[in-house]
Amino acid sequence: MNRFLETPDYRTPAIYREYRRDEIPCVNRGEVLRYAGIPAAVLRRMGDGGINDSCAEVLLSGEGINMDLPGAEGAGYGSCGEELYHLLNRAVEMVESAMTLRVSFVYAPIRWETAGEQEYPVLPFGQSSLALKRNLSGCFGVVIFAATIGAGVDRLIRRYERTEPAAGALLQAAGAERAEALCDAFNGEIRSIAAEHGYRTRPRFSPGFADFPLSVQPDILSITDAGRRLGITLDSSFLMSPSKSVTGLIGLKREEVE
Image (cartoon, rainbow, N blue to C red; front, side, top):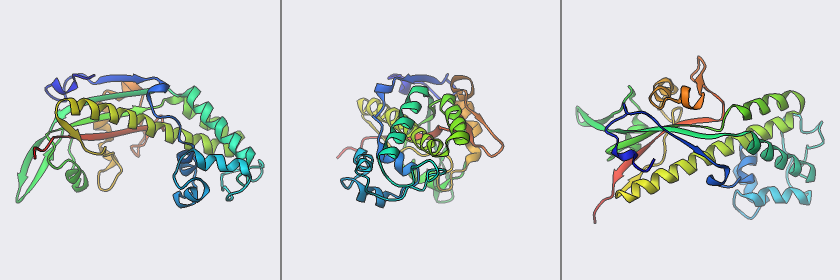
């Protein structure tokens, strides 16, 4: 993996990387609660001022806010308390047991073309996103990736959404947090490798953000061989299955010399 910058262009085979649980950041239970629908401002008041595990620990005190999870009231989880704390931990444990952490990616050099007075990045797929152009400004290359925590988590979610909706909602949230943690681990690895070559990375940029359309998903999945390597498929709305999957681009810039 650490030689990916030596690949000549995006037509080279995608690089596959499987992560162990201990290679990605530990679960942030505050983030899980945020994904479950509790506003960030409320979470900061619940804990020590940050969105972290302290937001969950306060549930044990029985003090806090009403947690409007689907089915929570009927299941006895209508307010923040010990039952909800244990349900949260149970959801996290189930997701961690079911997930498979996999990434497939390619490196592509960027060519910049001038149109009028503007320069635009030429990527291995058609797009006209101004937000992506700003994100990639000054970049000479880009890492295009797809990541997933696997179909096992989706099966868990479907099962519990029918039988225990509150647990289903927390499984959804825990899956989203773990997918983000996987992307963070991958981004960190790319950042470290780039730094060894004197490069720095731009924040990752995903389809569906700003004016970067989801319609580029088929191209990204094809380029990264994500269908074969990761088992990712698309529906007619360009939404991915497994649902806890992410695609994105990470721009590479040369370090500026002072």
